[in-house]
Image (tube, rainbow, N blue to C red; front, side):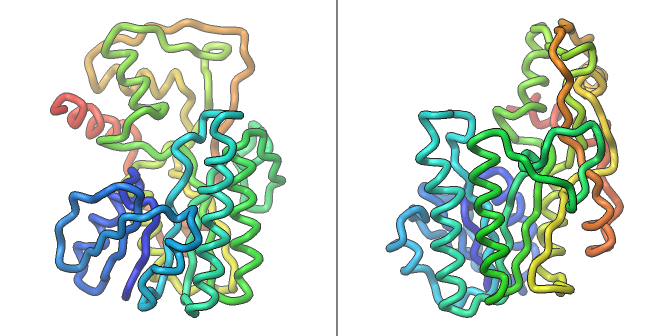
Length: 294
């Protein structure tokens, strides 16, 4: 099976490629704007910019499945990063979908985000209302709608990721909390708890993607939430990190309203028969061990 993976140097993509290359049944084409350190007989790296339609037109024709993991690196920058978010999250998605239609690609998987949902203290279901409130979430939701539209021509899957974390990750919520606790800085908590999330360990995330690659869709379009089974707030997360590091976290409480970034994962678990998640207490120990060695 030949698989094209976009954003191949990204955190999720590099872990997915490593997992797939453990099986000689997969031949991987990875595309990214920068070079690659991957050396494997079943891996070919393509250095290119998928926001350019000409780059898409030159992709290898023997691809069976596309896994579209690329996203704008400027997702936190609004309005300065708006054009880049539109180009990567929307325009490149349309280019890839049209290329996939023309070349009769069997399956198209698109990585989206739980940020597309309307804020709610309840566990999000795939049927819940979407109300994206950031440029990043809006462009990801636009990408989702394009994927659904093209499901007439191929099996299409959208997965909305909630709180992925793991060793080697940088500049996201979990590694940033690790750094703050290590350096003795305060962790800010809205009303003493902060954000509520359902954190997903990286190896669980890529196992889920791999199983969706092999999964026979029950319909031409499928939508899944990607999360683990634990609901944790930011204070609990910081305490777990502090325990792993043997350092007591310092907190500062604010009057801000707590936010929610958590989902129900029953649909994906039932579809791919996946339940054996890494518990956060175990996952964060692996993150800290990697942190110590870097």
